[in-house]
Image 1 (spheres, rainbow, N blue to C red):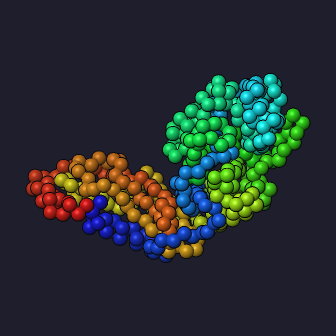
Image 2: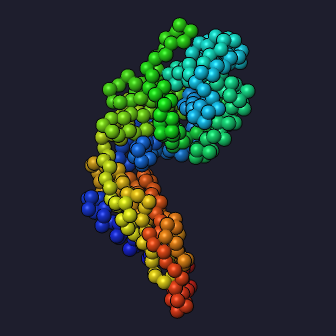
Image 3: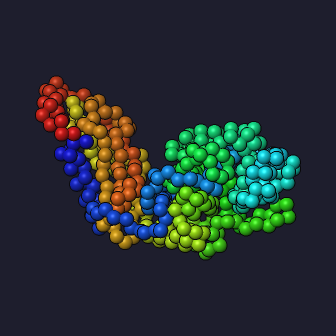
Length: 388
């Protein structure tokens, strides 16, 4: 977009922002000891915090969230039922069961276990045997199930994640990001409300062995109800957490913490800050014009833009001077332009983090202009189009 064309759009929107007391600046609003962190508002998907969120990390036990997504999706689509039973193979028993020395639900070799109990073992106890039993029952082998995990990850937009096994145990080529993990958690909460509750279950007993949920957020009073913890030699201690209070929910993923105590403290601080430090504000009502995009060769020089619904922004309650917004599109738009045609986006930054992106559409149709009008536009493009 040409800077000359961008200025009137930015200026018009700046008037709205100044009404909230907001001016341009670039700085992070919160500090954390985590090497990577990413947090969103669950209702809108607004990014509230981001720190090296696209860096590749080992998922460790956080990979189990993808195992659960594949499982929940199969149940929701009717391919599986909670009453289905899967048999505990020797591979599942040795690799993830009692002999493994890893997180386990202590499933007995050759026993048959209901899928719902396996889900509880994974969600509550981070059970490696539970993951492998599900994987083998659904796909014949854990390796084949891991391929399905990666394929499913691509389908739901987790482009930076690759899975090699169902457990997150160390394996070459297994990777994810805290951004992908946060978006995965959002999907688990949003798309599977009947199953999400398992992540908030505080304990589970299997084979007469009672184990508490490993998620430290569940033992606090801040409204934590999920989702998972993990640790690897390469990336330290990590967590995917979600808390809800007073009708608001925030979800975050963190990695690179020094120990489980630091993980619990930093997760609590970040999530609590997310709940208390932002408020939802409507800046454009439904069908209200957000701005204008320039049109080339049209009967009019510009076309009004609007969103498909109201535009809400989560504003920092303090430090409101850290928020900026811009209308971004590739222009000028060639005529004709049809009403409802996708044009660009309204992008909002909190500090240096792209926090929200709302698609914008043509609010009206603009037909092809007269020959003199098109000739004038062509001369203008020839003269200054190279600046774009």
